[in-house]
Image 1 (cartoon, one colour):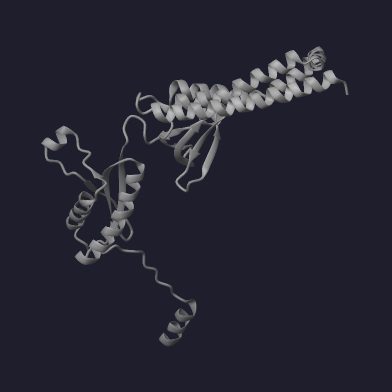
Image 2 (cartoon, one colour):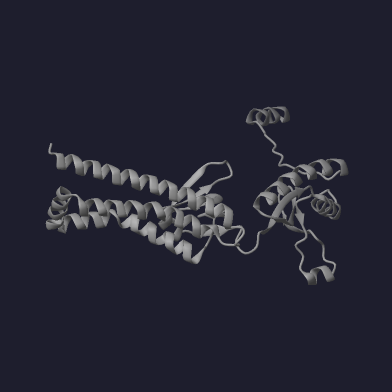
Length: 287
């Protein structure tokens, strides 16, 4: 191997190492900058997050282009590749379609902002969690079991997104609970309203007109007369998805305890099992 070849190999390694170091330093500096200034400037951190992830891509792209333009034997390879680039370009173009689609979708997410970093979103009624990061290729969502869901940006752009944080973080939870036909409906409704209003996560979601009219803070309606139960549905407001979930779970516990004390029955279906052998024995007795 010639000295010049060794020199160019060292140059390639040096450029790649420099690109790695520069990319790492840039990401850390941008990350520090985002944490310090996003809240102070009241700016959407999604913009900075996307910029942070774009920095590495730009640095490595410049490094690779520089290597191909500087190293002589790579120039020759480059020329040879472009000489017969018809089929190669088609193959590369087909292979990079998804990557390009993800990048463009990421830019659209940045521009139109269907969600932001730290928003609670649900995609296609399956993947739900907190948006942690938006990169050039994908969006990272932390679900409520502390797992990371990595969703390509192109998938998100075609998906139905439920955003629990955009514009207004208030959530109205629906709590369905069944009582027996023998139970006092009005008494049960009063207990539900009392227990809901006592909870620390309860939020008065009434409008000004509803407050003037002295409407109930918790609306409870009879929504079904079922086979074995009268179903009551309570509409309860809370601030944020996490608080609403805790509120609902606590109320189910408190209502069960309170209903037991107040004589309100929560029924369950009864089944009568008749054995064929017993029927035959009854017929024999009748004879």
